Length: 301
Ligand SMILES: [Zn+2]
Image 1 (cartoon, helix red, strand yellow):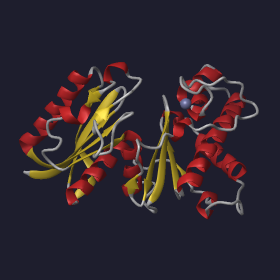
Image 2: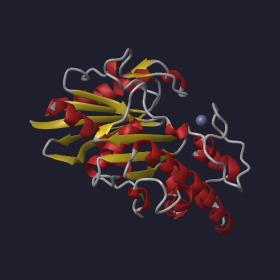
Image 3: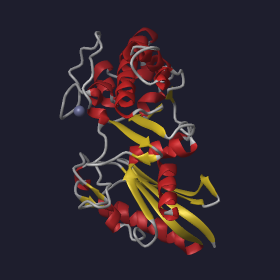
């Protein structure tokens, strides 16, 4: 029997599962996808997958990364629960408690963005530092932060996607955040871009695309700057569906110096390095590999 670490990443539309062997932790074997439907149906499919793995491999640890909000602090009530999520049927779901393997082997539980940040910090674009942030721009905007090699949380976890930002002078959008209107997520998420342009940024004609990138890059640069100022991260990785638009990361880099004050500005020098803003290197696997890394740490104590 092989000894493996199992990892589960739940998302709003799909759950990805995989295992890695302990001596080759970057390579996902037995990858499997499950559609996210009701909690009961989805979690029983997760249990069926883990049972199937356990028939041929010995699972030494389990990592679970989940869309949120989730309770990630072990010593708090309802640890392992998905709480007030906008995904209706999942609000107040004891996710970890219904995964049969959880707790029977060393188990880690963390938010999806913290997990992606940990994956990239362990094996990907953030491997040169132990102070790394990963931001995802998609249906919403989330930021996971690793400080000293550990996910930053406490009283929940950072919600930097909802910081207030300075509006781009050409931007007339009211903002799409249901809570704050024109917070960062309200101006820079996928739905915000759709609402501003009627399409995603990749599909715009060149002239409009330049303007769209300038606006979007301005908001990405502000989020990166605020995160670096508040936490001292040395690397800010940006991913998610919105960043699939070719050239957007470069547009954000162009805005960064103007937003942060550039070299000599009152901040850590790492913010001025051209590679401060970077793309993920683990592709679609940042989150799943982060769950592996977190489980491995619990296993090693
Ligand atoms: Zn908001």
